[in-house]
Image 1 (tube, one colour):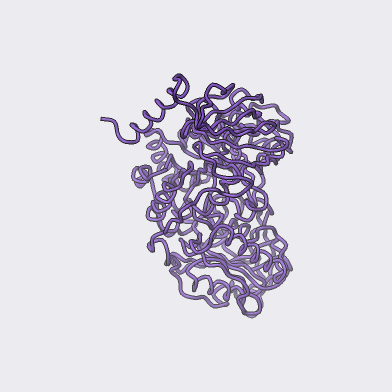
Image 2: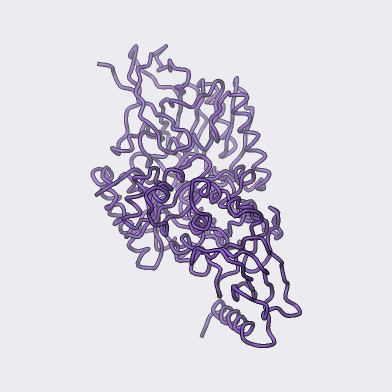
Length: 605
C-alpha cells in the first residue's frame, strides 16, 4: 500500500504527463519567451517554461501547452534561472528564527536553505534541535538541517550546555527536515586532536559512518590543513565531504583535487570567495565542486544587499562567467546535497524559478516562483508565513548569577607579566597569537595599549568558570558590550575599555536571559533580548530585528567609537575554539593548533 505522500506524487506526475500528451489538459502557467539559463549545459537561449502544479512540464516552445485557463507571463528580455540554494548557513547568526529569516530571504530568490543548528545544539542539545527541525518542516520552501556530530567541539577546552556524541546521531537523523551531519569541527585541527583527544576522532568516525550508511550527507570543516591532515579529515567524514572554511587559493586547489566540495564562503564578516575563486579563474580548475555559501549572514545585509543573488553578483565581479556562478548556487549545490528535485530547469523538477531583469551579471531578481506559485515580486513577499511558536523549554537558558567588575579582572602578585592575548583579524573568523608584557596595578593586570582591550567569557551553562584575557585590534574607545552569541558553546562574552562597564553589560544580558547589551559610564545604552537559547528572537520580525541591529551597530560606532563592521559577530567568533590560531573560551585562552588551554598570564623570567 502506497503512503499518502507517494500517492500525491503519482497523481501530480500523471497530471503532468496528461498536460504534455493529451488534448484536454494544459499547463497552469507558461513563462513566455525568456532567456533561459541552462545550468546543465552552461548556455543561455530563448525558450518558454511551462508549469503544472508544483512541477516544470517542459522548457522550449510551449505554445501547444497553453489552454484557455493557462496563465501566460511575458518574460521576454528577462532571464530565467533555477531558485538559488545557500548550501551552508546558520539561522542563529542572523538572530532570527527560520521563519523570519525566510521572510527576508525568499524575495531575493533563495528558495533552499541548508542550515546547521549546532549553535542551539550547544546550548540545549536535542531539545532545541528538534524544535528547529519542526519549525523548518512548517515552511513552504526547501529548508533542511544538518545536525552536529559532537558538542562541544573541543571537549576540555570549552563548556557547552549539552553534550552530544555519536550515540545521539540515530535519533537526530530521524527529525523532520534533517538530511545529514553538519560541519565536523571536532576534527578541524586534525593532527592535534588526534594527538590529544583521540576519542573525538573515533566518535566522529562512528557518527559519520552511521550517517553515510543511511544515505545522509556530511559537512566537513578543514580550516588551514593540508596533506595528511586534510586526507585524515576527509576520511573521518566518510569522504565526499564539503568545506566552507577554505581561505586561500592553495587550500582550494588541494581540496578540489581531493574531491572536496568547496563552499566558497561570502558572509557578513567572512569574505573568502575572492581568494578561493582564484583556483578557477587563475588555475582553470573545474568548478563542478565549487559552491557558494554564506555561513553567517546578518539580517541587515540581506535587506540592504540581498542573499544568494548578491553572493552570485560578487562572484561574477571576480571574473567568473555569470552562468558558471549561477551553477554554484543551483546544480552544483543540489548535486552535493542529493536534492534531485531542485537546482535545474527541467521536466519534472520543482518549479522554483527566478526571473531576473536587466543584465544577468547584476542579479536583479524581480519575480520568484516556488513550486509553481508566484511568491515574491520586486522584493516583496506575496505569501504569508505563519510564525512558529518555540516552546518555553528553549528559553531561560542563562544559568548564571551576576558578576562584579573584579570577577572579570586578572589578578597577579607580580609587578609585570607576559600576557597571552588574542589578535582580531577583521572579516575573518581566524585570529592571531599576541604575546605582550603588561603591568600589574593594585594587584590586577592592566592593558598599556589603546587597542588592547580586556575580554571575558563568562560561563552561563551552570558552570562558574570565567575565561579572561585581552583582545588586540578591536578599537573600542569607550564603554563595553556583551552577548550570549559566542561560538560555538555560546557562553557570555564581553569586551570593553573598563571592567565596570563590562560587568554592567554582562549583568544586563543575564537579566534578559540572553541577548546583546551595550554599556557606557555604568549605564545600559542599548540592548536586544534573544531569549531562544540566548541566540534568537521570537519577539521581533525580520525587518524589526534589522532596524534594531542597525540601531545597536550605530550605538557601538558613535557612543563607543568602534568602527569594526558587524562588531557583535566579530566578537562572537573570538571564542570559536576550532578556528586557528588563539581564541578565548570559559576555560581561558585556547591554543587551537595545539589543543590546549594557555594561562592568561605567565611570569617573566
